[in-house]
Length: 432
Image 1 (cartoon, one colour):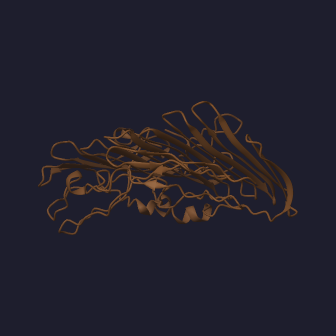
Image 2 (spheres, rainbow, N blue to C red):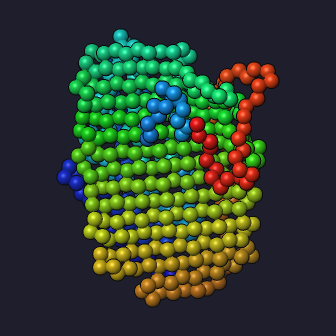
């Protein structure tokens, strides 16, 4: 097989922002760089502080505070791995800002100061880090208040804080307990918000969620949501757990920002689906990535990845691949490509057919005249089961399982709407 092409591009901002967006275009991985928001260790302010680091959110959920109607909405790395001569090279990561990152820890001026007399909430908020997947519930430290609270105050440095908690109820035993808190600097230039919630109803539905956001005086902003859901599939009657995380951050001074949407779904028979959609921009360059994997619980597996990037000048490059296997038989195929401003396009496509008998048919070609077609003796390897599946997610969801629904009166049963007579294609959980 011919050597892979190489494409390397870099963008440098006025304040030292540097983001490599290139690398060797291997058969299954184009080296598209990704920006990572790096966070410094928190400082200890002379007294023991309850501040601990983690996170950020992505869609407003005021519904859970006022009416709790519309808020339905790590660290573990993605389980998305490439095996058998399909090795994924790690993406280059760079700080979102210069070494003195204004986007990193800003606790002393960004959030209320921790003092022995301060009874206000301490923010756990900081910019999210890229490519950290979906965190486990223990990493969030969700602690719901047992009573209704509505309080606020002012710290010694002039910053203000508030904390509220409550409970909402609805039909079918619907219950939403929530806690909301936040604060501002004395001049209003910096602000943080946090919200926790848990939901349940008489159908067995349970949900645990977090939303966090913040901004600083330089105009940097971020937002993150996390959600974990337990419910019973209405067609198979199997228990299902679904987890999701959305993260985004934006620079206030540079043309830079990123967004990620992660999802995981599991059922009690071993069916698992995982995926992510990512986007980012750093000055003159933009990049995208999508990937997914699905295990049917009976030995069949599908995995795919699609990455691409482009510069402001119009140069584009990318890489994608897909594999399908069952009982040792399957296929892999992919393409690496590059397009210039003058519309000249180079590409290399490749494929593999695995027959399950130790024979593999390999073939491919490129626009520069390369080609190959051969049958070789080669062992077939693929992952028929996820390394993190139903047993693991149940073990990491003790707080979700412990959510207590409203007491159900004798003889009262929840209304269950099965919708159409055919199971829907959309496997997403019901919304309220």
